Length: 291
Length: 291
Image (tube, rainbow over all chains, first blue to last red; front, side, top):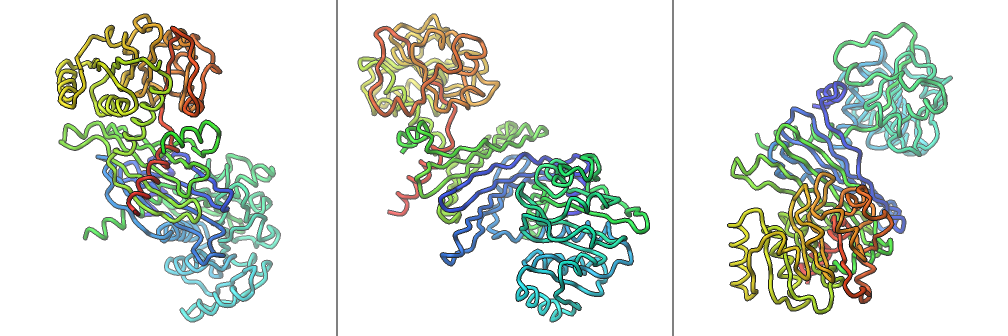
């Protein structure tokens, strides 16, 4: 579903309006409403997501929200999914694994993740379903969390080890899954022939991948050109002058047919999250529920 | 609640982001998502509203949606109200009745409504709770509907009669509640000392009140300056050059204290619907439910 939705999005067969945004300075909270529709799909989705960053101090989870599935034929609300963010995590993991697999060399075998949260875990597990992975490197700000994630990976049969940022940047495939506001790796540490996917940069103040990486990349993919330019790592690189604002290719086009990549080339993908994927995943869930 | 929310809005104590909008050309449908928060309130609201205009041909109602009430302290979803548009109708009726009562002469006694739908009925019933009404004039494109609404009014103890647009425009208080795309009355037919409230113009292509009316008005009120300029009757008047884009007063300020109006002056109010009212009304419903 995510692959099909990304391909539809690349061909302009989706509707993704600008999101609605509310801020609550007193409680350090925000609310985003995103909507999306894959043009030929019977349903569309409206997703309400809140983040209230004082919640953990009160023992409450930070994020809440719901996913509303609405018929694109009658406007009727078909379902309200109290998914607690699970479907967003899944569509993000699917998009990341798909594009990393599509752009990486066929013989790429080592995978590094930056970050130790849910997306770090999912990116490894889901990419491992698409290709064999020889070694998983984990880099986190917290050594404890990196070690504990590696233990989890090892328990599931991966060969995982915590490493420095420099070592992680040297893997065949690198995936960044952090909320960082400054680059988490140096472009010079990325090897020729490697592929890097950035997952975490979804707001203007965030930044995971250094502009120089985009300067070195022979192929750059974005999940949505305008979003990535506005608030992705690609936009930071364009504003830093290391790449042109026309240098990117829609991810969906690279998922349609095998990617031709020159020997020794570095490739990079920037994901900001596309509302049409929420609609696609929610529709898939409804179909399964209706079976 | 609506009065308090309009006053808060006039003083900038609300957050009302630009709405999110999706269109479905194949099925002549649209989806609007509006959000609003009265700054000091414990909850905010996100309202999803769809209109699919081929539905009646299939025996289905045109409008659907829901109102989601979310804690402004933790971001938790407190309630999803399947109100079928009732709360929007109520907050619109309340805002209209409040401002008509506040701006009309104390001795204004005849009331005309343009339109024969739910808002026409509510505007009469709710204004009648605020002041005595001697006669209700109803003007509708359909004579049958106008007659049938008058019968309903008469059964409830009002003295109502269907009239021409010219007669309706001559009432002490005039309220327009139509989806018209061209003015429903002539400014020349509005008498000195009268007040006119426009309820129906909520999109750029709609227009109920003629620009000349705003030219004649000594006092102009808007529920939201930017919205009314962008897609209200006030905006049409400003673009036609009959009034200045600074000539309006926030409705909330006129609800705080008695309105000083010169003898013989015409006054006008333009309502486009403020998202903060949805939050206020939804909070009131939750409080009642929790009793």
